[in-house]
Length: 556
Image (cartoon, rainbow, N blue to C red):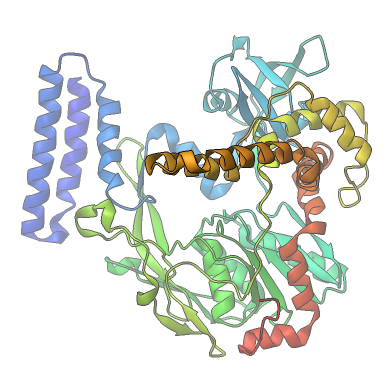
């Protein structure tokens, strides 16, 4: 314990030494509060009724301190270092598979093609029984994941149960350096339109996109290209600039960062001649496109270099640095805001509230939004993310489809389907036939998939309101009839919403045979945003009118 207190004291002293830049009054305030913290820590150790765990207590205190700031400023303990390395590099030592917890066991939910789990013959649906002879029943996914990660080249034995087989399977798996592709799929679509899916911004993402673009251009008569940034939460800022090098010539301002310290004020420009500065470009964005995705999409928009199709992005205009702390720990700290070419910052939530009060951390109201202009003079706005040039709202899946997915009935049927069928048609051609859907309905017999619709919730809420206001006796009969009618219609949901359910089934089954690449390829055929982007890119008059600000959306 004394050693722990000495470590804590040394850590706090190092903080004290670093505060001189804030002036004497700030130094005294920090010094006073650090002294209070150290005194409390000591008294807890001496007087608290039970033994305390200094490490856990200190980490809880740090996390509570950081909660008063923005959610992106976090403490990284020594045990979490590898996870943060993976976030920036996309690399780790392991087997290359997604896992999930089902009841008391961990199952393989998706092996990555060509990686150790796949090479060893593990399949989606396999239940993990033991690793190196140690039972894993009752462990959570993170614990089992740690057991399977390790030094590339090292091996371990795993025993799994596979649905449909009586005997357990024993496999020996050799770990490898796992690098998840930032570009999981690229290919050609109709009207000679190229398509590139970018999953994240880790080391060399820009090179991966550039290589995909060059291959599509060199091997095809590519007249336009779609870059898909949907659900891309961002990553490394400089990789966003590297991607802009593909489409914008050298010397163009892409992003500026501005912070409290002088060395955080930086300007990032394109550094080389563009691979193609003329090809029509469409970017697909949605509410989960954030950070570096917003730098790319915002720069494309501000420079009038392409058209944005989809929904408003997340709205993260903050920059974080990883700062080293004592004893191999780190802190990810927000050090600056970023500004795209028009000069706007697209940060949606203001975290600079007085005293870190959560109530002061609010969205910027529309009345305070500032207007900026793109290169061609189109109006754009700060805060609240990047707004698309053409809005396309995806269809929300039905409640029953989501329930069947959440309760793993879709997953389990796909596992059974793979056991019964050696192969399927190509990812683009495969469909769920009526015969297959009838098999799924038969599979569901006797299984639980109870769910509550929004309409049912509204009726229950109306009943409570009516009872509170003493109107229920007047409408009880009508509410009862509405509930009965709703139940009758709900019983047909498996038929009414079969197209939604078939989409889930199709995607899950395709993934069993063609992995993530196939799942993406198979989903493009009926993708509303992709179809709209292709339509715009094929009509040059429409494309250029959007960039000039003269386009009138007749669909609205």
